[in-house]
Length: 91
Image (tube, rainbow, N blue to C red; front, side):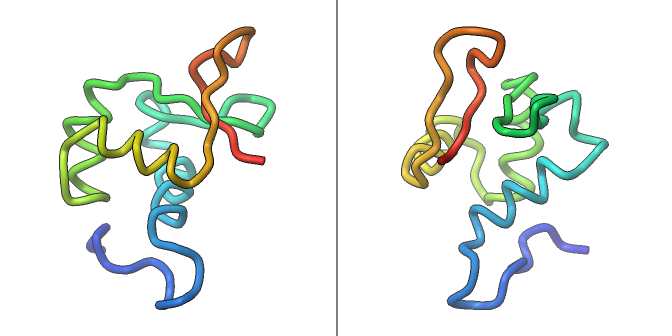
């Protein structure tokens, strides 16, 4: 299965969000990116591996900065303190 195949029909859920959810749902990537135990935010565990293998596979580029711009553009916020520090959430 080609991970770059559109995962959502046109004009439905935007591909970025579908791809992000798909990545977060994969058990084999939990050492790289995962939901936090409370399920309200997610964290990139291994940024180097994420940038080298996950981003190119799903998004067709290999730039962490570009990925984070997309994350921010979709309204995700980064936690800056506490146990969820450096995780991302969306209200």
